[in-house]
Every structure is written in C-alpha cells, then in structure tokens.
Image (cartoon, rainbow, N blue to C red; front, top):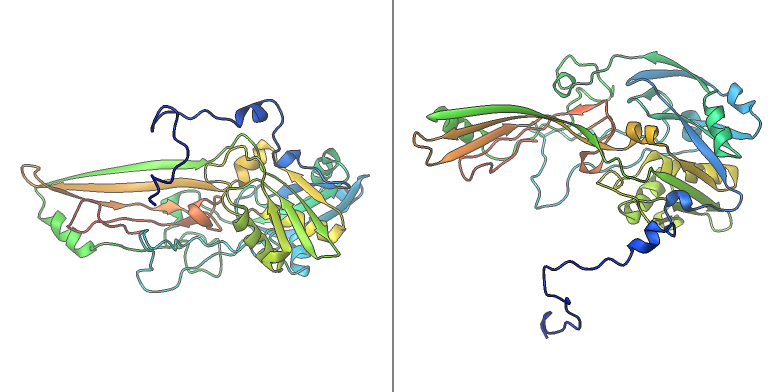
Length: 373
C-alpha cells in the first residue's frame, strides 16, 4: 500500500492551508516548563565569574573574599576541574555530511581542533569566558560572592578583525597551533576559474562584510543537575536543540559512559542554532552536583548570554562575476574569510577571539560550482 493510500487523516481545507496550533494556550498562560522552571529538592545555586579580557593569562584566583560570605558553599576553579579529571568539551566542527562541500586542508595537514575546557586553568581566550564558579545557598548570595572573587590576569595581545587574525604575524590564541587559521580548503577548480577570469570581457568585484550575530533567544540558558550516588548517574535539565548530543558531550567531559548521563529538555524558549551545541555550564553543574552531593542550578542573565552564547557570521566576502561581451554567460568566484572563535564547535557558532579563514572559488561549469573554505 502506498503512503498516500494509507493516510487516515487529511487537512481540513487541503494542502498548503494553515494548521491551527494547539500548544500556545499552555505556554502563554504560564503553564510551560522552561529550564529555569525546573527546581530540585535541596538544590544550591551557581554563578560564574567571567573574564573581562579577550586574551589573558590567569595568574591567580583568590577565593577568600567569596568564601567569607555567609551562605557560600564552594568556589571552584579550572584547577579544581583539572584535579577532578574533567575533559575538554568534544566539539566536532568539521562537517561529516557527504552532501556538504568537504573541508580539506590545501597542504594535506590535519585540522587543529582547539580544546574547550569548561573552566580554563591557564588562559582566558574570549571576553565572557568562565574562569570560576561560585556555589551558594541562594542565587543572590552566589552573585554577590562572585563579585568578591579576585582574579589576577596578565593581559595578552588579541585581535578582533577577521582578516587581521588570519595574518601571519597575528598573536596566536593557541600555542599548539602554527597560526590562527583553522581551515584553508579549496573545492572546485581554482586554476580553471582563474583562466576563465583571465579571458573575461567584463569582471565585477564586490566586497561585503556580514557582522557577528548571536541567537538572542527569549529564554536565557539555564541548567540544573543532580547526581545519584547509588547508581552513579547524572541527570541534567537543560533546554537545547538536541538532548542526545548534549548527553554525549557532557558524558565525555565528565569522563563517564553516555549511559551514566540523562539530559532532559522540556520547553525551549527559542534556539536559532545557538542552543544546538554543548555549553560548559551543562557539564559544570553536573560536576558540581557530584562534588557537593546535592543538586546545583545555574541560570544565566541576558548580559552573560550576549557574551557567552555561541555566535556566528562575522565574515568578509569578496566575490567576482565574469561575463562574456554580450553577457550571454557568466561565472562567479568568491573568497570568504569567516570567524570561528577560540573553540570552533558545530555550525561554526562559537565565542569570539580566534579566527578562521573561509574562501570560495568556482570552476568553469555552473556558476558558483565550488567553494574554498
């Protein structure tokens, strides 16, 4: 039996007609359940101390002032995370879809996939990167104590322009890399495209810049986690674009099997791609819950989200169009350097500071038939 023959329901007014929504009443009358609406018995509250520098060495973190505040339970740093064996978040930024334009280094070398520690112990690599976590009995106490954490930084050189960051003399964000260019790949026939343009009667060039953007969903990110000592399992409540992906990354960061982590996403107040990847806070609340032996909750504010939500765009696009004398045929080529951030993650949405270069060119077949990324 065919799919069409097996249908038991049909649209009331035919295909293409709007379908009445049924979920809105619950959401607009306060009956929804977003991440911040989840509360667990005995939970503590976390607040993150974030770097004011785009690039800086962390010399020392003095937690004495925060620990002196009544109601503060703990102040955790990147050194604590390292001592407990936390791993970097295992982002996989290279597309694996066979239908997408493949990324291959022009010189055949392997891509440098920057590590993404949930709390860095050595350096901060973008404004807003979390460097310490304060945990207290109430959100207000946690916020007040976070302001008493004294972090000593040695500011390091940084760049904010995409093309400047790709320059050979640009300051390196990662000492393990030889440059800030993480991908320099060509798809298509560059030599053939150059030959076509050399014979062109008319060539038009245009350079444009697309500014950096972030999702700015209505609901700021939040997460709460509990750890069950008897079973050794974690439960993390966090809105996202894919709980299975968050589960995999949180488990890898904690160094436990995936079966030991359960991620629950209820209502999600907007995504726009920025919630599709794992964030440090998701692993941090799970780690803290195990360390303290009680649930831990974190809710970000709008300022934090603007600084730390994964971002996108920030690309410079130089495009050329070639045509014959009577404009009966045309070919185009493009060079598109784009920013990937200090720790590239999926969909190239990641925080600012490290730059990668993308470019495109075409072969002499259909217009825009290839890409150099």
